[in-house]
Image 1: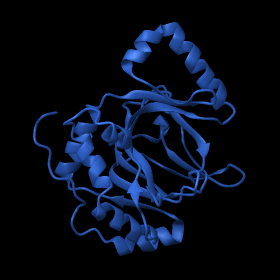
Image 2: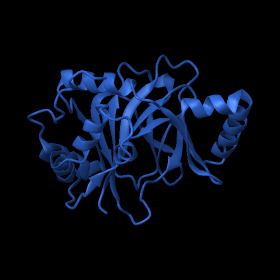
Image 3: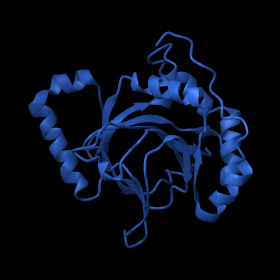
Image 4: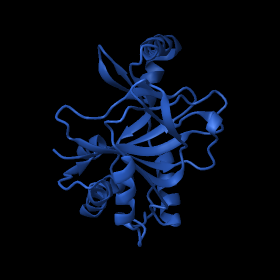
Length: 242
């Protein structure tokens, strides 16, 4: 993607104080039309061009990231063995499996030079975005924003968990949705659960929506069904205070 990419900025006129009141009441808020429509479309198109890696968690290996070349080298039998272990762990509520692009890591390592994904990473770590986030969640001192682009395809999932971080540095979780016309039956819902692990609310993937929520609440992403009509595309991470 060598063409000029538009300037990334929040849609003018967003009322951060209004959304702050909603977040204070529910520890959750969704902000529609976070970007101007033309910019949102450009980001969606840009995200689809990423060199995705299959990511999952393994208690022996940690976070595993497999490029297309890695998967080809492992071959069908090698991948089947790895996926069987992922599924076995998931039955015990351990782990996740989806396609991702680690945005902060890629920027730090100067990976994919010239790709406009780095402009989005820089924007999410800009004063403008951090200040907006601080206002909405009612907490000053956000130092940086973790970000990964995610592509959930059939079978992708994220088991229930909480997001606190090793030093409680994750002050708020967020997602930027870039999925249109999603059907509930396709799975991929952001779910919140109570202490009995009953689902208290579920939220469809949506297009051009910023979701902010308290990551200390138990949450999960339900598996993408075998008949889902398309992938679930988003950027997700945490507002952090390090």
